[in-house]
Image (cartoon, rainbow, N blue to C red; front, top):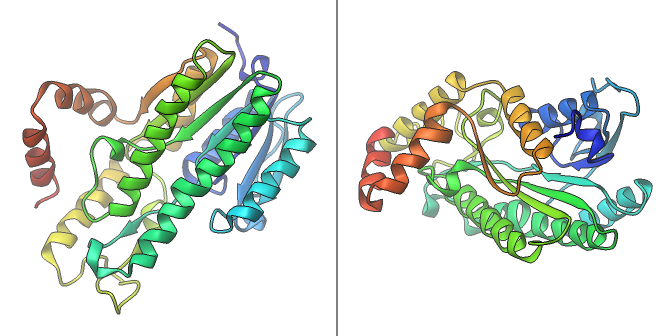
Length: 288
């Protein structure tokens, strides 16, 4: 097994590099000597990255998944700067919407699905085409354990992440027997600012609430559990360490990451238990 990620991948493109898992991935790759292009809707927030190892370099990129054509063009330009293709592409950017499905206008869900799933798939389409021309590379989709355990009142997020996992599995078949690899990276709850950036709706006419779920005991209970899970979760650096290990081992397929319960025990129990029992247990866990 190689000692450093840069022995396998010299260049990397990471979406959503501003904070949370994306920032942790970038820092890990720079330590490993990889040249990294990291994206944000506001590139001014892409600060604090230093070339922590020989050969490493960070290039900030302004990219908004809500603008698919522009995002594809920007990705293509960055790939040309990297020599025509990135060795490693990590599709991490995303956001949550916390609301009853019918309480928000459908445009809210449409925008989330377009950004998290459709535009992400569009960039992966370009990335994989360029990788095939070499052929070499690794495509990482940062999905979520929500693909297996849907989160209440986060419909769009659940659908987008499940779709991203399905895309990963489809591409794993297509790249089988080739030097290309696809990883479906499924993190659980991590101690990040994910909830602080959450879009919330308490009614179709009311946008953000100061306290998500205020006035509805079901939403309030779920939000309290979500907050507690994030606060007690491991630091984002653990996710970066898990991804590093998977890359060095040249893993393909699903890589779960998070606390022992979420990433190891819960998926095992879910495989052994009837689906109805898993759903009932999940509902009780969230106070529903």
